Image (cartoon, rainbow, N blue to C red; front, side, top):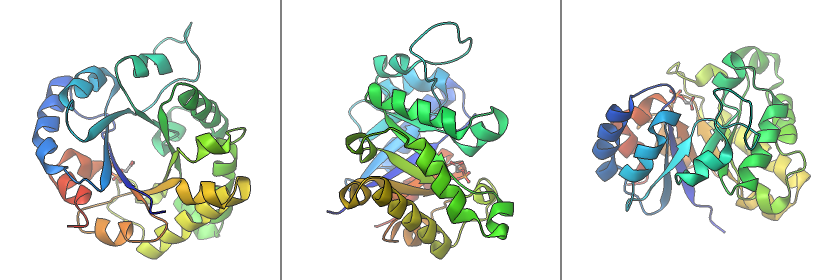
Length: 250
Ligand code: PGA
């Protein structure tokens, strides 16, 4: 079974709501590719307007974060049903920037993955090693651990619907994209880990993205790798170049 590619933009903390609508209108005609699922993950305050703006197009809207409780005294947090209520379909979970600046851990990632599935939101689960870890030769061990904890007590029906984003931290926002070999090696290791945790069928269905300085020029080679099913794109998702990335196969 051929897996459908999924290419998501991660807007991070960029664009006001009015700028977001302008950018969506600009990108909408550029990101048509019937072979690809296209997702724009935008800041929380822009989600409602973004969902409205993409109506009738091939674009789905994702959040960049979400909390793991239903409601209550969690000042500043966003509950899963707040996302589903407005039509958000995806949520990025455990991005390395959230781990670094907002104390997210593999355990909170696991809690959030559970909540996302409970509410029918597709999680884009991020993992990735630091430059130091790569130099120490512990990349695969580290990633396997992140994956094992993220998927703790997640059943195979849920797991096969998840999206995993492999994002080497040293490649994020640095212009230093991983080589296709490095990216493919880790994405294959992630798939093998999923096969160990579940079974081959689940591993064959789950989609694994590469992220970290993806550009229009690096996308075709990366996305042609057997275990890379698309990308999570930061900087380049805010530009018309994102259209070229989505149409990497044209
Ligand atoms: P980048 O960001 O494409 O700007 O490197 C990727 C990400 O952090 O998701």
